[in-house]
Length: 336
Image (cartoon, rainbow, N blue to C red; front, side):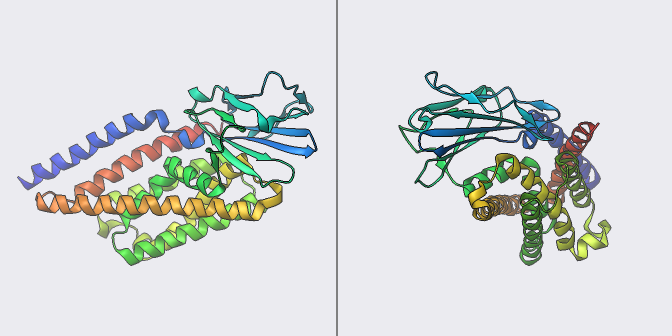
């Protein structure tokens, strides 16, 4: 009877994994859809310079483009430039853009966001986010869309499903408060270090292989989680914080790729980097708090129902590992 019950639990876990993967397949590469960046700055009195930075992922770029007022003459400042990860376009105009309306054509049909930074002479820079639900910014009407780099950091963490999944895996893997705290702290410290080094240009790695290895780190964590505790690697059991620190270095490079493509203002690199990192940490804490409560509640319900709670963690490991393996294969294929 017990054997049949365990078999049922395992089968249920597999079905749950298949269902979750099928549901999440359309957004499985969502973290690879990097935000675009539009910068409007007043160079001289009455002269505005515009920079459009559109990320390229897998040798493709999204069909989105900024639309400026029809009564504004936009003069291209040279041909478009292509870097390893982005398309750059520059314009100049004497039109008072910050008193008009700017929108992003095609944004409503995409999964990405556009960060807009506006600098007027004699005023503090302002940052906005344009989303699919609101692809238009009317500067003269409202500043309701204004955001800071803290919000950008929170949004990137919460929308970066692979980073979220790794943090969820840590919560599932380490169930005691103090070891969980030290492990998450190590992960935080590590990705903060590489985020800073990469964003400041002191470390440079291609983003595509970094993203593939990040997915592989989730496969490793899911594999360990799926094993009975006594069969897990002695290294991850005794010092999980070292494992988290090592993988955190990789995840920091992933964050840096997103921030680098969004762009940092040259006049406020340090503070923008710091605020973005604070936002990432806030998002991470939100995920940990919510999922820790969910795990606690699930275990309590399982015990009250005389259900084998191990099946919950093993089923979660199957979902994590299967989804992460899909990412790993998909992102590895893009390398060739």
